[in-house]
Image 1 (cartoon, rainbow, N blue to C red):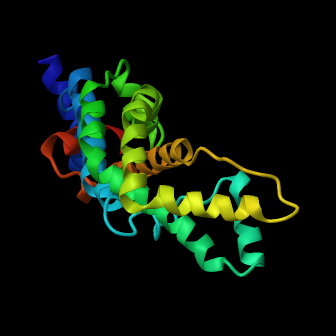
Image 2: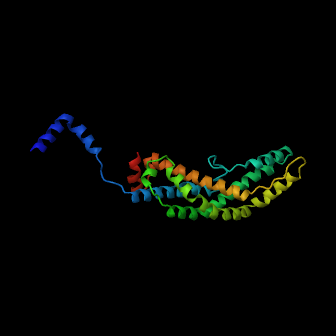
Image 3: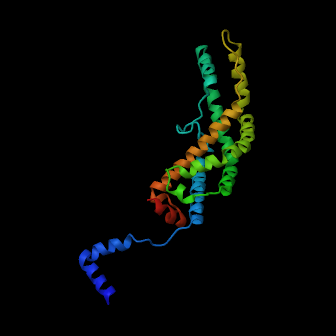
Length: 232
């Protein structure tokens, strides 16, 4: 009887609309760590499917200002010297083929990134869910970058040969080293391109993660909708 009177009194005090708002704010069930971890993996895989695949297309790196691979500091002086002696076209081609190699390598390596996501273990999935817009991607990078480098580097090396980047850069370096008043260079472009391409992959996965976090329409599965609603 007392409980009934309390409910009637509460109803009278707050009214129908206000009471419904209170009810709506009550917990509607819990989401466990396993579900959150699976949703984070889905988000990362969606980033690979929607964004990383774009990197594998023609100009996926070269015409994407977010990830375009520029020359390392050591080669900027090479680029300038070639342009100064009228070899600007060769310099342009050198930059283009580095990006072409990255595009080719990413196309072959998408299964590597998918496997990396499968193997990741989110010790504190809820903390990552409620973290920054790129928290899951940052965790993936921290957990897999060394392993991915070791798998990705030989693919980059093969792609350099496939697109002719190794031959073009051998020609560039030879011409530069033959110029007077220059110090010889011998850069490890395979290592450099591997690191830059990996950074590009993580950047584009983060783009999709942010979309999922900030745009409900980007949550393409029921699990993504359920879990990421917790951080809205």
